[in-house]
Length: 67
Image 1 (cartoon, rainbow, N blue to C red):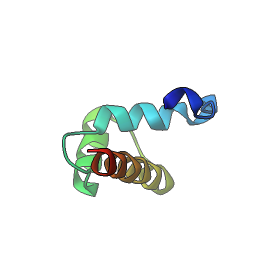
Image 2 (image 1 turned 90 degrees about the vertical axis):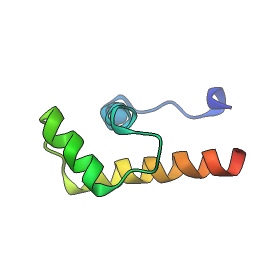
Image 3 (image 1 turned 30 degrees about the vertical axis):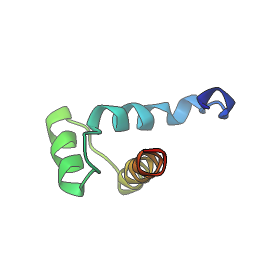
């Protein structure tokens, strides 16, 4: 299924990498993202947090719909 997906623009890859790093076994909370960003010394912009939350919603929707 992933092979049919469009290529990710390299300038956005870091957001996916951050999401994969912070993702856990449950849907993410803002507190978890904040704690991760503090520990990783990553200063997230508001829009970057929104993208990470959106990626998480997409991930969990796929897990629940295909589980």
